[in-house]
Amino acid sequence: MARFATLEDVKKIEQDQPWPDSQPATTLYELLTNTTNAHGSRNAITFQLFSGATDPAETLTWTDLHARVTQAANLFRSLGVGPTDTIAYILPNCNETAVTLLGGAVAGIVNPINPLLEPEQISSILRETNAKVVVTLKAFPKTDVAQKVAEALADAPNVTTVLEVDMLRYLTGLKKFIVPLLRPKNPVSHSANVLSFNAECAKQPTTLAFEDPKEDRVACYFHTGGTTGMPKVAQHKYSGMIYNGWIGHTLLFTEQDNLICPLPLFHVFACHVILMASVASGAHVVFPTPQGYRGEGVFDNFWKLVERWQISFIITVPTAIAAMMQRPVNADVSTVKTAFSGSAPLPVELFNRFEKATGVTLIEGYGLTEATCLVSCNPVEGEKKIGSIGVPFPHTDVKIVCETPGGPTECGPDAIGEICISNPGVFAGQTYTEVEKNKDLFYYNDYLRTGDLGRIDDDGYLWITGRAKDLIIRGGHNIDPAEIEEALAGHEAVAFAGAIGQPDAFAGELPCVYVELVDGAQVTEADLMAYASEHIHERAAIPKHLELMDELPKTAVGKIFKPDLRKMAITRIYNGALEKAGHSARVVSVSEDKKRGLVAHIARNGEADEDGVKTVLGEFTRPWDWHDAA
Image (tube, rainbow, N blue to C red; front, side, top):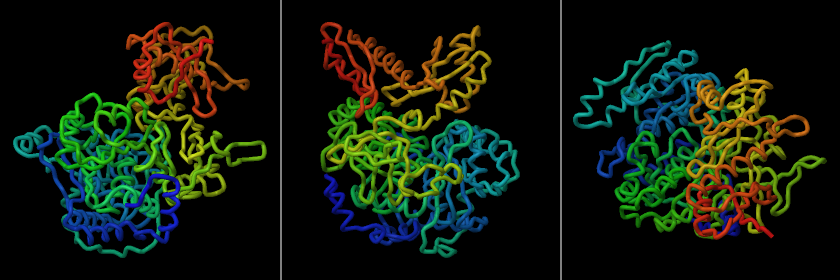
Protein backbone atom coordinates (compact mmCIF):
# COMPACT_ATOMS: atom_id res chain seq x y z
CA MET A 1 0.00 0.00 0.00
CA ALA A 2 1.20 3.53 -0.73
CA ARG A 3 1.90 5.68 2.31
CA PHE A 4 -0.83 8.28 2.85
CA ALA A 5 0.08 10.52 5.78
CA THR A 6 0.99 13.95 4.39
CA LEU A 7 0.60 16.11 1.29
CA GLU A 8 4.15 15.09 0.36
CA ASP A 9 2.96 11.47 0.19
CA VAL A 10 0.16 12.53 -2.16
CA LYS A 11 2.65 14.28 -4.43
CA LYS A 12 4.94 11.24 -4.42
CA ILE A 13 2.04 8.95 -5.44
CA GLU A 14 1.16 11.35 -8.25
CA GLN A 15 4.78 11.27 -9.48
CA ASP A 16 5.20 7.50 -9.15
CA GLN A 17 1.76 6.63 -10.56
CA PRO A 18 0.79 9.33 -13.07
CA TRP A 19 -2.79 9.33 -14.30
CA PRO A 20 -3.97 7.95 -16.69
CA ASP A 21 -0.72 6.12 -17.44
CA SER A 22 -1.09 4.16 -14.18
CA GLN A 23 -4.74 3.32 -14.86
CA PRO A 24 -5.07 -0.42 -14.14
CA ALA A 25 -7.62 -1.05 -16.90
CA THR A 26 -9.57 0.75 -19.60
CA THR A 27 -12.96 -0.85 -18.99
CA LEU A 28 -14.80 -2.21 -15.97
CA TYR A 29 -14.92 -5.73 -17.43
CA GLU A 30 -11.17 -5.69 -18.04
CA LEU A 31 -10.59 -4.65 -14.40
CA LEU A 32 -12.93 -7.36 -13.10
CA THR A 33 -11.24 -9.97 -15.30
CA ASN A 34 -7.76 -8.95 -14.09
CA THR A 35 -8.82 -9.29 -10.45
CA THR A 36 -10.52 -12.63 -11.10
CA ASN A 37 -7.39 -13.96 -12.79
CA ALA A 38 -5.31 -12.90 -9.77
CA HIS A 39 -7.69 -13.84 -6.93
CA GLY A 40 -10.37 -16.10 -8.43
CA SER A 41 -10.78 -18.48 -5.48
CA ARG A 42 -10.92 -15.73 -2.85
CA ASN A 43 -14.19 -14.34 -1.50
CA ALA A 44 -15.56 -11.35 -3.40
CA ILE A 45 -19.00 -10.46 -1.98
CA THR A 46 -21.22 -11.83 0.77
CA PHE A 47 -24.90 -11.11 1.46
CA GLN A 48 -26.89 -11.96 4.59
CA LEU A 49 -30.67 -11.69 4.48
CA PHE A 50 -30.85 -11.50 8.28
CA SER A 51 -28.46 -9.83 10.72
CA GLY A 52 -27.67 -12.62 13.18
CA ALA A 53 -24.03 -13.59 13.61
CA THR A 54 -24.81 -17.20 12.68
CA ASP A 55 -27.57 -16.58 10.12
CA PRO A 56 -27.14 -18.08 6.63
CA ALA A 57 -25.16 -16.04 4.11
CA GLU A 58 -24.30 -16.41 0.43
CA THR A 59 -20.70 -15.75 -0.58
CA LEU A 60 -19.48 -15.45 -4.17
CA THR A 61 -15.82 -15.90 -5.02
CA TRP A 62 -14.28 -13.67 -7.67
CA THR A 63 -14.69 -16.53 -10.15
CA ASP A 64 -18.37 -16.83 -9.22
CA LEU A 65 -18.93 -13.07 -9.42
CA HIS A 66 -17.15 -12.79 -12.78
CA ALA A 67 -19.35 -15.55 -14.22
CA ARG A 68 -22.59 -13.99 -12.94
CA VAL A 69 -21.66 -10.51 -14.10
CA THR A 70 -20.84 -11.92 -17.54
CA GLN A 71 -24.19 -13.73 -17.70
CA ALA A 72 -26.05 -10.57 -16.64
CA ALA A 73 -24.24 -8.48 -19.26
CA ASN A 74 -25.04 -11.07 -21.94
CA LEU A 75 -28.69 -11.10 -20.84
CA PHE A 76 -28.97 -7.31 -21.09
CA ARG A 77 -27.45 -7.34 -24.59
CA SER A 78 -29.88 -10.10 -25.62
CA LEU A 79 -32.71 -7.78 -24.54
CA GLY A 80 -31.54 -5.08 -26.95
CA VAL A 81 -29.34 -3.05 -24.60
CA GLY A 82 -26.39 -1.43 -26.36
CA PRO A 83 -23.56 0.74 -24.95
CA THR A 84 -25.80 3.83 -24.88
CA ASP A 85 -28.96 2.13 -23.55
CA THR A 86 -30.01 2.14 -19.90
CA ILE A 87 -30.65 -0.66 -17.43
CA ALA A 88 -32.28 0.71 -14.27
CA TYR A 89 -32.52 -1.18 -11.03
CA ILE A 90 -34.74 -0.51 -8.03
CA LEU A 91 -33.49 -3.03 -5.49
CA PRO A 92 -32.46 -3.38 -1.87
CA ASN A 93 -29.01 -4.82 -1.19
CA CYS A 94 -28.43 -8.44 -2.22
CA ASN A 95 -25.94 -10.26 -4.43
CA GLU A 96 -28.16 -9.72 -7.47
CA THR A 97 -27.89 -5.95 -6.92
CA ALA A 98 -24.10 -6.02 -7.17
CA VAL A 99 -24.32 -8.32 -10.21
CA THR A 100 -26.82 -5.97 -11.90
CA LEU A 101 -24.66 -2.92 -11.18
CA LEU A 102 -21.54 -4.46 -12.67
CA GLY A 103 -23.24 -6.36 -15.50
CA GLY A 104 -25.32 -3.33 -16.44
CA ALA A 105 -22.23 -1.12 -16.66
CA VAL A 106 -20.53 -3.70 -18.88
CA ALA A 107 -23.46 -4.03 -21.27
CA GLY A 108 -24.75 -0.46 -21.30
CA ILE A 109 -25.46 2.33 -18.83
CA VAL A 110 -26.66 1.22 -15.40
CA ASN A 111 -29.01 3.44 -13.40
CA PRO A 112 -29.39 2.63 -9.67
CA ILE A 113 -32.61 4.12 -8.23
CA ASN A 114 -33.43 4.55 -4.56
CA PRO A 115 -36.28 2.11 -3.74
CA LEU A 116 -37.52 4.51 -1.04
CA LEU A 117 -38.56 7.04 -3.69
CA GLU A 118 -42.21 7.51 -4.56
CA PRO A 119 -43.59 6.07 -7.87
CA GLU A 120 -43.76 9.47 -9.57
CA GLN A 121 -40.08 10.11 -8.82
CA ILE A 122 -39.07 6.65 -10.03
CA SER A 123 -41.01 7.08 -13.27
CA SER A 124 -39.50 10.53 -13.91
CA ILE A 125 -35.98 9.10 -13.56
CA LEU A 126 -36.87 6.19 -15.86
CA ARG A 127 -38.10 8.67 -18.47
CA GLU A 128 -35.07 10.96 -18.08
CA THR A 129 -32.60 8.09 -18.55
CA ASN A 130 -34.79 6.42 -21.20
CA ALA A 131 -34.38 3.09 -19.41
CA LYS A 132 -35.08 0.06 -21.58
CA VAL A 133 -34.76 -2.65 -18.90
CA VAL A 134 -35.70 -2.52 -15.21
CA VAL A 135 -34.46 -4.98 -12.57
CA THR A 136 -36.53 -4.96 -9.38
CA LEU A 137 -38.03 -7.14 -6.65
CA LYS A 138 -40.70 -9.74 -7.13
CA ALA A 139 -43.53 -8.92 -4.70
CA PHE A 140 -42.43 -9.90 -1.20
CA PRO A 141 -43.91 -9.51 2.31
CA LYS A 142 -43.04 -6.35 4.32
CA THR A 143 -41.85 -4.37 1.30
CA ASP A 144 -43.76 -2.27 -1.22
CA VAL A 145 -40.94 -1.97 -3.77
CA ALA A 146 -42.63 -4.20 -6.37
CA GLN A 147 -45.91 -2.33 -6.06
CA LYS A 148 -44.27 1.10 -6.36
CA VAL A 149 -42.26 0.04 -9.40
CA ALA A 150 -45.35 -1.39 -11.09
CA GLU A 151 -47.10 1.95 -10.57
CA ALA A 152 -44.06 3.86 -11.84
CA LEU A 153 -43.83 1.73 -14.99
CA ALA A 154 -47.29 2.83 -16.02
CA ASP A 155 -45.73 6.26 -16.65
CA ALA A 156 -42.49 4.96 -18.21
CA PRO A 157 -43.53 3.46 -21.58
CA ASN A 158 -39.90 3.29 -22.73
CA VAL A 159 -39.30 0.24 -20.47
CA THR A 160 -39.72 -2.96 -22.50
CA THR A 161 -38.56 -5.61 -20.01
CA VAL A 162 -38.82 -6.07 -16.24
CA LEU A 163 -36.52 -8.61 -14.60
CA GLU A 164 -37.66 -9.69 -11.14
CA VAL A 165 -35.37 -10.78 -8.28
CA ASP A 166 -37.13 -13.15 -5.89
CA MET A 167 -35.68 -12.90 -2.37
CA LEU A 168 -37.38 -16.22 -1.54
CA ARG A 169 -34.22 -18.04 -2.58
CA TYR A 170 -32.36 -16.59 0.43
CA LEU A 171 -34.86 -18.06 2.91
CA THR A 172 -34.55 -21.44 4.62
CA GLY A 173 -36.72 -23.63 6.79
CA LEU A 174 -40.35 -22.83 7.55
CA LYS A 175 -40.10 -19.25 6.26
CA LYS A 176 -39.42 -20.55 2.76
CA PHE A 177 -42.81 -22.31 2.78
CA ILE A 178 -44.78 -19.52 4.49
CA VAL A 179 -43.68 -16.55 2.36
CA PRO A 180 -45.39 -17.73 -0.88
CA LEU A 181 -48.66 -17.82 1.07
CA LEU A 182 -48.13 -14.24 2.30
CA ARG A 183 -46.76 -12.82 -0.93
CA PRO A 184 -48.80 -9.71 -1.86
CA LYS A 185 -50.52 -9.60 -5.21
CA ASN A 186 -48.92 -7.18 -7.65
CA PRO A 187 -51.41 -6.01 -10.28
CA VAL A 188 -49.52 -5.33 -13.50
CA SER A 189 -50.48 -1.93 -14.88
CA HIS A 190 -47.85 -1.71 -17.60
CA SER A 191 -47.03 -3.35 -20.90
CA ALA A 192 -43.42 -4.44 -20.22
CA ASN A 193 -42.50 -8.12 -20.47
CA VAL A 194 -41.89 -9.58 -16.96
CA LEU A 195 -39.20 -12.26 -16.55
CA SER A 196 -37.18 -13.88 -13.74
CA PHE A 197 -33.74 -12.28 -13.43
CA ASN A 198 -31.94 -15.38 -12.13
CA ALA A 199 -33.69 -17.80 -14.50
CA GLU A 200 -32.86 -15.68 -17.54
CA CYS A 201 -29.24 -15.13 -16.40
CA ALA A 202 -28.77 -18.87 -16.00
CA LYS A 203 -29.51 -19.34 -19.71
CA GLN A 204 -26.58 -17.13 -20.70
CA PRO A 205 -22.94 -18.18 -21.33
CA THR A 206 -20.23 -17.34 -18.79
CA THR A 207 -17.98 -15.89 -21.48
CA LEU A 208 -18.74 -12.43 -22.84
CA ALA A 209 -20.82 -12.77 -26.02
CA PHE A 210 -20.00 -9.31 -27.37
CA GLU A 211 -16.98 -7.09 -27.86
CA ASP A 212 -15.77 -4.97 -24.92
CA PRO A 213 -14.09 -2.03 -26.69
CA LYS A 214 -11.09 -0.63 -24.80
CA GLU A 215 -12.48 2.88 -24.60
CA ASP A 216 -13.84 5.25 -22.00
CA ARG A 217 -17.60 5.84 -22.01
CA VAL A 218 -20.54 6.73 -19.78
CA ALA A 219 -21.44 3.57 -17.83
CA CYS A 220 -23.61 4.82 -14.94
CA TYR A 221 -26.40 7.28 -14.24
CA PHE A 222 -26.86 8.30 -10.60
CA HIS A 223 -29.69 10.55 -9.50
CA THR A 224 -28.77 13.21 -6.97
CA GLY A 225 -30.75 13.43 -3.75
CA GLY A 226 -34.35 12.37 -3.75
CA THR A 227 -36.56 15.41 -3.57
CA THR A 228 -40.03 15.61 -5.08
CA GLY A 229 -40.13 16.22 -8.79
CA MET A 230 -37.21 15.24 -11.01
CA PRO A 231 -33.82 14.75 -9.34
CA LYS A 232 -30.84 15.65 -11.51
CA VAL A 233 -29.06 12.70 -13.10
CA ALA A 234 -25.25 12.63 -13.05
CA GLN A 235 -23.21 10.76 -15.66
CA HIS A 236 -20.28 8.56 -14.63
CA LYS A 237 -17.63 7.22 -17.00
CA TYR A 238 -15.45 4.13 -16.70
CA SER A 239 -12.48 6.37 -15.94
CA GLY A 240 -14.19 7.86 -12.87
CA MET A 241 -15.31 4.47 -11.58
CA ILE A 242 -11.86 2.98 -12.07
CA TYR A 243 -10.25 6.02 -10.42
CA ASN A 244 -12.38 5.55 -7.30
CA GLY A 245 -11.44 1.87 -7.22
CA TRP A 246 -7.78 2.74 -7.75
CA ILE A 247 -7.79 5.07 -4.73
CA GLY A 248 -9.14 2.32 -2.48
CA HIS A 249 -6.62 -0.20 -3.79
CA THR A 250 -3.68 2.22 -3.69
CA LEU A 251 -4.30 3.65 -0.22
CA LEU A 252 -6.43 1.19 1.76
CA PHE A 253 -7.31 -2.30 0.58
CA THR A 254 -5.63 -5.52 -0.57
CA GLU A 255 -7.05 -8.97 -1.31
CA GLN A 256 -6.45 -9.78 2.38
CA ASP A 257 -9.05 -7.27 3.60
CA ASN A 258 -12.67 -7.85 4.58
CA LEU A 259 -15.01 -4.84 4.42
CA ILE A 260 -18.45 -4.49 5.98
CA CYS A 261 -20.68 -2.12 4.01
CA PRO A 262 -24.24 -1.74 5.32
CA LEU A 263 -24.82 1.17 2.90
CA PRO A 264 -27.28 1.00 -0.02
CA LEU A 265 -26.15 -0.03 -3.48
CA PHE A 266 -27.99 2.89 -5.06
CA HIS A 267 -25.54 5.37 -3.49
CA VAL A 268 -22.12 6.26 -4.90
CA PHE A 269 -20.41 5.58 -1.55
CA ALA A 270 -21.31 1.87 -1.65
CA CYS A 271 -21.14 1.47 -5.43
CA HIS A 272 -18.03 3.39 -6.47
CA VAL A 273 -16.00 3.84 -3.30
CA ILE A 274 -16.49 0.37 -1.81
CA LEU A 275 -17.54 -2.09 -4.51
CA MET A 276 -15.17 -0.58 -7.09
CA ALA A 277 -12.33 -0.62 -4.56
CA SER A 278 -13.03 -4.32 -4.02
CA VAL A 279 -13.07 -4.95 -7.76
CA ALA A 280 -9.72 -3.15 -8.06
CA SER A 281 -8.03 -4.81 -5.08
CA GLY A 282 -9.63 -8.24 -4.68
CA ALA A 283 -10.91 -7.36 -1.20
CA HIS A 284 -14.01 -9.08 0.19
CA VAL A 285 -17.09 -6.92 0.95
CA VAL A 286 -19.98 -8.01 3.19
CA PHE A 287 -23.50 -6.57 2.76
CA PRO A 288 -25.67 -7.35 5.81
CA THR A 289 -29.48 -7.35 5.23
CA PRO A 290 -31.37 -5.83 2.29
CA GLN A 291 -31.76 -2.52 4.15
CA GLY A 292 -28.15 -2.31 5.35
CA TYR A 293 -27.92 -0.25 8.54
CA ARG A 294 -31.72 0.14 8.47
CA GLY A 295 -32.16 -3.64 8.65
CA GLU A 296 -33.69 -5.24 11.72
CA GLY A 297 -31.05 -6.13 14.31
CA VAL A 298 -28.07 -4.77 12.36
CA PHE A 299 -26.95 -2.37 15.08
CA ASP A 300 -27.59 -4.91 17.85
CA ASN A 301 -25.51 -7.54 16.02
CA PHE A 302 -23.02 -5.24 14.31
CA TRP A 303 -19.93 -6.04 16.36
CA LYS A 304 -20.68 -9.76 16.24
CA LEU A 305 -20.87 -9.53 12.44
CA VAL A 306 -17.49 -7.78 12.48
CA GLU A 307 -16.09 -10.72 14.46
CA ARG A 308 -17.78 -13.33 12.26
CA TRP A 309 -16.36 -11.98 9.00
CA GLN A 310 -13.00 -10.87 10.45
CA ILE A 311 -13.66 -7.34 9.23
CA SER A 312 -10.66 -5.06 8.72
CA PHE A 313 -12.51 -1.97 7.40
CA ILE A 314 -15.87 -0.60 8.56
CA ILE A 315 -17.75 1.59 6.10
CA THR A 316 -20.11 3.93 7.88
CA VAL A 317 -21.84 7.31 8.19
CA PRO A 318 -22.36 9.60 11.22
CA THR A 319 -25.95 8.48 11.87
CA ALA A 320 -24.82 4.84 11.99
CA ILE A 321 -21.90 5.68 14.31
CA ALA A 322 -24.33 7.40 16.69
CA ALA A 323 -26.50 4.27 16.77
CA MET A 324 -23.47 1.99 17.27
CA MET A 325 -22.40 4.01 20.30
CA GLN A 326 -25.72 3.21 21.97
CA ARG A 327 -24.73 -0.47 22.04
CA PRO A 328 -21.81 -2.17 23.80
CA VAL A 329 -18.84 -3.39 21.78
CA ASN A 330 -19.66 -7.00 22.64
CA ALA A 331 -17.35 -8.94 20.33
CA ASP A 332 -13.72 -9.31 19.30
CA VAL A 333 -13.00 -6.40 16.93
CA SER A 334 -9.23 -6.75 16.94
CA THR A 335 -9.15 -7.39 13.18
CA VAL A 336 -10.48 -3.89 12.42
CA LYS A 337 -7.86 -1.45 11.14
CA THR A 338 -9.97 1.55 10.19
CA ALA A 339 -13.52 2.90 10.00
CA PHE A 340 -14.25 5.23 7.10
CA SER A 341 -17.07 7.77 7.57
CA GLY A 342 -18.58 9.84 4.80
CA SER A 343 -21.79 11.40 3.40
CA ALA A 344 -22.25 14.01 6.16
CA PRO A 345 -20.17 15.99 8.70
CA LEU A 346 -19.05 14.05 11.79
CA PRO A 347 -19.56 15.65 15.25
CA VAL A 348 -16.36 15.92 17.32
CA GLU A 349 -17.85 14.22 20.38
CA LEU A 350 -19.05 11.29 18.28
CA PHE A 351 -15.57 10.92 16.77
CA ASN A 352 -14.00 10.80 20.25
CA ARG A 353 -16.57 8.38 21.66
CA PHE A 354 -16.18 5.95 18.77
CA GLU A 355 -12.39 5.80 18.96
CA LYS A 356 -12.48 5.46 22.77
CA ALA A 357 -15.11 2.71 22.74
CA THR A 358 -13.64 0.64 19.92
CA GLY A 359 -9.95 1.46 19.77
CA VAL A 360 -10.47 1.77 16.01
CA THR A 361 -9.06 4.64 13.95
CA LEU A 362 -11.82 6.71 12.37
CA ILE A 363 -11.19 8.73 9.23
CA GLU A 364 -13.59 11.24 7.74
CA GLY A 365 -13.81 11.82 4.01
CA TYR A 366 -15.61 13.88 1.41
CA GLY A 367 -17.10 13.15 -1.97
CA LEU A 368 -20.12 13.88 -4.10
CA THR A 369 -22.23 12.20 -6.75
CA GLU A 370 -21.34 14.79 -9.39
CA ALA A 371 -17.62 13.86 -9.11
CA THR A 372 -18.31 10.09 -9.28
CA CYS A 373 -17.47 10.36 -5.57
CA LEU A 374 -14.10 10.65 -3.82
CA VAL A 375 -12.39 14.01 -3.27
CA SER A 376 -10.50 13.96 0.05
CA CYS A 377 -10.09 12.30 3.43
CA ASN A 378 -8.04 12.58 6.59
CA PRO A 379 -4.79 10.63 6.09
CA VAL A 380 -4.96 7.05 7.32
CA GLU A 381 -1.44 7.19 8.76
CA GLY A 382 -1.06 10.92 9.33
CA GLU A 383 -2.61 13.74 11.34
CA LYS A 384 -6.40 13.69 11.53
CA LYS A 385 -7.86 17.15 11.99
CA ILE A 386 -11.27 16.46 13.52
CA GLY A 387 -13.91 18.48 11.73
CA SER A 388 -11.90 18.80 8.53
CA ILE A 389 -12.43 16.59 5.49
CA GLY A 390 -8.72 15.95 5.14
CA VAL A 391 -6.40 16.36 2.19
CA PRO A 392 -7.26 15.82 -1.47
CA PHE A 393 -6.57 12.36 -2.89
CA PRO A 394 -3.82 11.86 -5.48
CA HIS A 395 -4.71 13.32 -8.89
CA THR A 396 -7.45 15.49 -7.32
CA ASP A 397 -6.97 19.25 -7.51
CA VAL A 398 -9.07 21.50 -5.28
CA LYS A 399 -9.46 25.24 -5.72
CA ILE A 400 -11.27 27.61 -3.39
CA VAL A 401 -12.89 30.17 -5.66
CA CYS A 402 -14.22 33.58 -4.59
CA GLU A 403 -16.56 35.77 -6.59
CA THR A 404 -15.11 39.23 -7.18
CA PRO A 405 -16.28 42.20 -9.30
CA GLY A 406 -13.72 41.12 -11.88
CA GLY A 407 -14.99 37.54 -11.97
CA PRO A 408 -14.09 34.30 -10.14
CA THR A 409 -10.69 34.33 -8.44
CA GLU A 410 -8.79 31.62 -6.60
CA CYS A 411 -8.59 32.36 -2.87
CA GLY A 412 -5.50 32.23 -0.71
CA PRO A 413 -4.93 30.00 2.37
CA ASP A 414 -7.77 30.10 4.92
CA ALA A 415 -9.96 32.34 2.76
CA ILE A 416 -13.52 31.06 2.33
CA GLY A 417 -14.95 30.45 -1.11
CA GLU A 418 -16.69 27.76 -3.13
CA ILE A 419 -14.96 24.37 -3.24
CA CYS A 420 -14.21 23.50 -6.88
CA ILE A 421 -12.60 20.22 -7.88
CA SER A 422 -10.96 18.55 -10.84
CA ASN A 423 -10.09 14.86 -10.94
CA PRO A 424 -10.65 11.79 -13.16
CA GLY A 425 -14.14 11.43 -11.67
CA VAL A 426 -15.30 14.83 -12.92
CA PHE A 427 -16.97 14.66 -16.33
CA ALA A 428 -16.09 18.21 -17.32
CA GLY A 429 -18.90 20.06 -19.04
CA GLN A 430 -21.24 17.06 -19.09
CA THR A 431 -21.92 16.20 -15.46
CA TYR A 432 -25.71 16.03 -15.83
CA THR A 433 -27.81 14.37 -18.52
CA GLU A 434 -29.82 17.58 -19.00
CA VAL A 435 -27.59 20.02 -20.89
CA GLU A 436 -29.08 23.13 -19.29
CA LYS A 437 -28.23 21.81 -15.82
CA ASN A 438 -24.51 22.01 -16.73
CA LYS A 439 -24.65 25.76 -17.31
CA ASP A 440 -22.39 27.67 -14.91
CA LEU A 441 -21.44 24.40 -13.20
CA PHE A 442 -17.70 24.77 -13.86
CA TYR A 443 -14.93 27.23 -13.10
CA TYR A 444 -11.95 27.34 -15.48
CA ASN A 445 -13.87 24.84 -17.69
CA ASP A 446 -12.58 21.81 -15.74
CA TYR A 447 -13.32 22.54 -12.07
CA LEU A 448 -16.70 21.33 -10.81
CA ARG A 449 -18.49 23.79 -8.55
CA THR A 450 -19.54 21.68 -5.59
CA GLY A 451 -21.89 24.23 -4.04
CA ASP A 452 -20.03 23.76 -0.74
CA LEU A 453 -18.24 26.68 0.88
CA GLY A 454 -14.88 25.96 2.43
CA ARG A 455 -11.25 26.82 2.96
CA ILE A 456 -7.84 25.18 2.77
CA ASP A 457 -5.58 25.72 5.78
CA ASP A 458 -1.80 26.21 5.77
CA ASP A 459 -1.26 22.42 6.03
CA GLY A 460 -3.41 21.71 2.99
CA TYR A 461 -6.43 20.35 4.90
CA LEU A 462 -9.86 21.10 3.49
CA TRP A 463 -12.65 22.46 5.72
CA ILE A 464 -16.36 22.87 4.87
CA THR A 465 -17.86 26.02 6.37
CA GLY A 466 -21.29 26.13 4.74
CA ARG A 467 -23.17 25.57 1.51
CA ALA A 468 -23.61 27.91 -1.40
CA LYS A 469 -26.41 25.71 -2.70
CA ASP A 470 -29.00 25.71 0.01
CA LEU A 471 -29.41 21.96 0.55
CA ILE A 472 -30.54 20.27 3.75
CA ILE A 473 -28.42 17.17 4.32
CA ARG A 474 -30.27 14.64 6.47
CA GLY A 475 -27.96 11.73 7.25
CA GLY A 476 -26.24 12.12 3.89
CA HIS A 477 -29.60 12.44 2.07
CA ASN A 478 -29.97 15.67 0.07
CA ILE A 479 -33.23 17.58 0.49
CA ASP A 480 -34.00 20.67 -1.58
CA PRO A 481 -35.62 23.26 0.73
CA ALA A 482 -37.52 24.65 -2.28
CA GLU A 483 -39.66 21.51 -2.32
CA ILE A 484 -40.83 22.18 1.26
CA GLU A 485 -41.36 25.87 0.57
CA GLU A 486 -43.31 25.27 -2.64
CA ALA A 487 -45.58 22.72 -0.98
CA LEU A 488 -46.46 25.11 1.86
CA ALA A 489 -46.89 28.01 -0.57
CA GLY A 490 -49.87 26.11 -1.92
CA HIS A 491 -51.76 26.77 1.33
CA GLU A 492 -54.03 29.81 1.01
CA ALA A 493 -52.95 31.17 4.42
CA VAL A 494 -49.20 31.09 3.71
CA ALA A 495 -47.44 34.21 2.42
CA PHE A 496 -43.82 33.03 2.77
CA ALA A 497 -42.05 29.86 3.89
CA GLY A 498 -38.33 29.49 4.59
CA ALA A 499 -37.00 25.93 4.99
CA ILE A 500 -33.56 25.18 6.45
CA GLY A 501 -31.73 22.33 8.10
CA GLN A 502 -31.80 22.47 11.90
CA PRO A 503 -28.98 20.75 13.82
CA ASP A 504 -29.60 17.16 14.85
CA ALA A 505 -27.29 14.97 16.92
CA PHE A 506 -28.24 11.85 14.96
CA ALA A 507 -28.92 12.88 11.35
CA GLY A 508 -26.67 15.98 11.22
CA GLU A 509 -29.59 18.06 9.99
CA LEU A 510 -33.37 17.74 9.93
CA PRO A 511 -35.71 19.86 7.81
CA CYS A 512 -37.51 22.67 9.60
CA VAL A 513 -39.55 25.54 8.21
CA TYR A 514 -40.54 29.04 9.32
CA VAL A 515 -43.80 30.47 7.99
CA GLU A 516 -45.22 33.96 7.59
CA LEU A 517 -48.99 34.13 7.07
CA VAL A 518 -51.07 36.25 4.74
CA ASP A 519 -52.39 39.33 6.56
CA GLY A 520 -55.47 38.39 8.55
CA ALA A 521 -55.12 34.63 7.94
CA GLN A 522 -55.97 32.22 10.75
CA VAL A 523 -54.27 28.83 10.80
CA THR A 524 -52.43 26.78 13.42
CA GLU A 525 -48.97 25.25 13.24
CA ALA A 526 -50.59 21.82 13.60
CA ASP A 527 -52.83 22.51 10.60
CA LEU A 528 -49.83 23.53 8.48
CA MET A 529 -47.83 20.46 9.58
CA ALA A 530 -50.72 18.24 8.48
CA TYR A 531 -50.86 20.10 5.16
CA ALA A 532 -47.09 19.73 4.71
CA SER A 533 -47.25 15.99 5.45
CA GLU A 534 -49.94 15.58 2.82
CA HIS A 535 -48.31 17.68 0.08
CA ILE A 536 -44.60 16.85 0.51
CA HIS A 537 -44.31 13.47 -1.20
CA GLU A 538 -40.89 12.47 0.10
CA ARG A 539 -41.07 11.42 3.73
CA ALA A 540 -37.52 12.52 4.53
CA ALA A 541 -38.39 16.11 3.51
CA ILE A 542 -41.39 16.51 5.84
CA PRO A 543 -40.36 19.17 8.41
CA LYS A 544 -39.62 18.10 11.96
CA HIS A 545 -40.37 21.61 13.19
CA LEU A 546 -42.72 24.28 11.85
CA GLU A 547 -42.88 27.73 13.42
CA LEU A 548 -45.13 30.69 12.68
CA MET A 549 -43.52 34.15 12.65
CA ASP A 550 -45.11 37.57 12.37
CA GLU A 551 -42.59 38.33 9.64
CA LEU A 552 -39.71 36.33 8.22
CA PRO A 553 -36.32 38.08 8.04
CA LYS A 554 -35.74 39.40 4.53
CA THR A 555 -33.04 41.07 2.49
CA ALA A 556 -33.34 44.54 1.00
CA VAL A 557 -34.80 43.05 -2.18
CA GLY A 558 -37.38 40.97 -0.29
CA LYS A 559 -35.68 37.55 -0.32
CA ILE A 560 -35.92 35.43 2.83
CA PHE A 561 -32.68 35.84 4.79
CA LYS A 562 -31.92 32.28 5.83
CA PRO A 563 -28.81 32.92 7.99
CA ASP A 564 -31.13 34.47 10.60
CA LEU A 565 -33.39 31.42 10.45
CA ARG A 566 -30.38 29.14 10.94
CA LYS A 567 -29.28 31.17 13.96
CA MET A 568 -32.74 30.78 15.47
CA ALA A 569 -32.71 27.03 14.87
CA ILE A 570 -29.22 26.57 16.35
CA THR A 571 -30.25 28.54 19.45
CA ARG A 572 -33.46 26.52 19.92
CA ILE A 573 -31.86 23.11 19.40
CA TYR A 574 -28.73 23.75 21.48
CA ASN A 575 -30.68 25.28 24.36
CA GLY A 576 -33.13 22.40 24.28
CA ALA A 577 -30.30 19.86 24.45
CA LEU A 578 -28.60 21.71 27.34
CA GLU A 579 -31.85 21.99 29.27
CA LYS A 580 -32.67 18.32 28.76
CA ALA A 581 -29.22 17.37 30.07
CA GLY A 582 -29.72 19.52 33.16
CA HIS A 583 -27.16 22.23 32.35
CA SER A 584 -27.79 25.90 33.13
CA ALA A 585 -25.56 27.09 30.29
CA ARG A 586 -27.42 28.63 27.35
CA VAL A 587 -26.81 30.05 23.86
CA VAL A 588 -26.74 33.83 24.07
CA SER A 589 -25.92 34.54 20.43
CA VAL A 590 -24.93 32.95 17.13
CA SER A 591 -22.51 34.76 14.86
CA GLU A 592 -20.87 34.24 11.49
CA ASP A 593 -17.19 33.33 11.66
CA LYS A 594 -15.15 33.70 8.49
CA LYS A 595 -13.40 30.39 9.01
CA ARG A 596 -15.99 28.27 10.80
CA GLY A 597 -19.35 29.51 9.57
CA LEU A 598 -22.14 29.97 12.14
CA VAL A 599 -20.80 29.68 15.71
CA ALA A 600 -22.97 29.47 18.85
CA HIS A 601 -21.78 31.45 21.87
CA ILE A 602 -22.57 29.79 25.22
CA ALA A 603 -23.00 31.63 28.54
CA ARG A 604 -22.03 29.62 31.62
CA ASN A 605 -24.85 31.03 33.79
CA GLY A 606 -23.12 30.31 37.08
CA GLU A 607 -21.22 27.12 37.87
CA ALA A 608 -21.20 25.41 34.50
CA ASP A 609 -20.20 21.76 34.10
CA GLU A 610 -17.78 22.48 31.26
CA ASP A 611 -17.10 18.84 30.42
CA GLY A 612 -20.82 18.09 30.47
CA VAL A 613 -21.60 20.99 28.15
CA LYS A 614 -18.81 19.88 25.79
CA THR A 615 -20.29 16.37 25.72
CA VAL A 616 -23.80 17.63 24.91
CA LEU A 617 -22.81 20.13 22.22
CA GLY A 618 -20.11 17.85 20.83
CA GLU A 619 -22.93 15.68 19.46
CA PHE A 620 -23.64 18.39 16.86
CA THR A 621 -21.56 19.40 13.85
CA ARG A 622 -21.98 23.18 14.19
CA PRO A 623 -19.17 24.81 16.23
CA TRP A 624 -19.59 26.72 19.51
CA ASP A 625 -17.52 28.83 21.92
CA TRP A 626 -17.85 30.00 25.50
CA HIS A 627 -19.28 33.53 25.61
CA ASP A 628 -16.95 36.00 27.27
CA ALA A 629 -19.20 38.13 29.48
CA ALA A 630 -16.49 40.77 29.79
